[in-house]
Image (cartoon, rainbow over all chains, first blue to last red; front, side, top):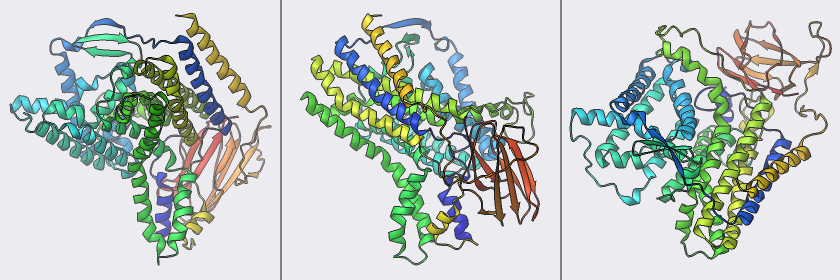
Amino acid sequence: MIPFVGLLVLVFPAAASAHAFGQTYVLPIPFWMYAFAASAALALSFVVVGYFVTAKDAVRNARTVDLGGILWARGGFLGVLRAFSVALLALTLLTALFGTPNPFANFSVTFFWIIFVLGFAYATALIGDVYAALNPWRGLCDLIEWRYPGAFRARVTYPAWLGYYPALVLYMGFIWVELFAHASPRGLGLYLLAYTLINLGGARLFGPDAWFRYGEMFAVVLRLIAKMAPVEYTSGRLRLRQPFSGLLKEPADHPSLLLIVLFMLSSTAFDGVHQTLPWVHIFWKRIYPPLAAMIAQPYLFFVDIYYYWQWSMLFLSPFFYLAVYLAFIWLMKRAVRSERTLRELALDFTFCLVPIAFVYHVTHYYTLLLTQAPAIVPLVSDPFGWGWDLFGTARRGPNPVIVPADWVWHTQVALILVGHVVSVYLAHAKALELFPRTGRAVWSQLPMLVLMVAFTTAGLWILSLPIAAGQVQLPQTGAIGGVALT
Amino acid sequence: MPAVRIVFAVLAVLVLAGLWYAFRPHHEAPTQSAAVQPVPETTPTAPVGLPTKAFELVVRDGKPVAGPAGMRVRQGERVTLRIESNADDELHLHGYDLKVRIKAGEPATLEFAATRTGRFELELHERHTQLGALEVYPQ
């Protein structure tokens, strides 16, 4: 009997949840809509190419409009906000560690996974990199520094070769926790505590400036997302700028940043694909049967292997994308006979992929944000789940928003197309800047265009796959497991 | 805004509209898959004109032993879910947030109109076992 239970959990890993927490009610995109979106992506790409052939200039509006001094740049307001941010981190840690084990009644789970990881990240695309000023871990360092001066004097100069690799490793760990750890509130608390200690250690070793630039993964990822924002904060002034223009400002400064952008794309793709029937079948119908014949008790053995297989696919995914990306960059280099090295070109075009990666993330998780975010209202009044009612909202929350399936499909397709067109546009503008002779610049973009259509179509395809999780498929599971079911 | 931009914006809209028209299904394609064999059934409670789909699940010791691979219905249809188990539990349909008590050996029934679209999971509440999912497709 035990193997069967194991199998159920295993083949249907979403038994607990699809994401780290919470439920979505999303249906796969119908095939015709997938076909429409894929062809629209291709056709619109050529419209963009056509535009650049005729326009012949990299019209990039680099102008910004000064909207005035930032409120928080003056006086102690920033201090208050940062203290609030540190207090929220402390509340999240405390509720996670000491609150109710029921994830739906514990403030920390909804606040961290839904409000911060999804809501705040998406807001960053609109309001810019406020996280740089409000980073709670940085705030914690400042607090300690204020009490114990010199605690965060850099002991080691940050090595240039290390780049953003610490953030990449932490980002991979974070996605692993999100998809596989099925952490209870307490587990989340322990992970957050460990992450806090890593940040304090990193800041103590390399100094806060270096660590929060290269090592703290939320700072790195949110800074990438903020490059799309229509506003920027420069020397205490708030400035309005053309949306997405931040992505063209400078090239990526290290290959590890390219890997982070690719992981943003590939981990979402992995999350989309790892519970679908075709993916589950790759392991259980192609890899498992020939190997199973060689071992006694194969099923028990392969239960563990299956997890390692899933994890290694997750961690390897950005490198698959990197191989594809570099192949197309190489083709582009050949097409324009550029003097620039492969590495330079790969870094030049890195940020052009951010919109595709970002909209893809939004299409996957925005429904979760809508269904789960309203729950924060009652949770604020009773953060520990101990029956408190601090603000009188403990028993009165707005209802979860369940978006009808056809609306979900339409917004998914629309968002993906918008992200695709923006990415194609940015890559063209970048090419015109790098290869000033227009003819060459346009040609250089054919490989890039194929690459982006491929990324977009792959993303759409994943959204159209049937979901394996939670489906009762007894004959198949019986055959797979080779276990008697009754 | 230069005229070129307007021309290309119009072109983009035309491309989108044309493709949309070309790909949109022109006839109502049934979403039933071959794997799903709902038992059509009319109950006196169902309003005239709305088809009812019935599904039966059999659970032994908290594990599903018989039932459809996937439950697919169209929005607006009535759904009858009959469940029979040899242990007490509670059946919970997510999203609709419907619950029904199950007593050992006695079939329990959940009846409702599929008004919301999406993929909703069915769970045995006490054992936290996933029994499958109801997929409600838009009309």
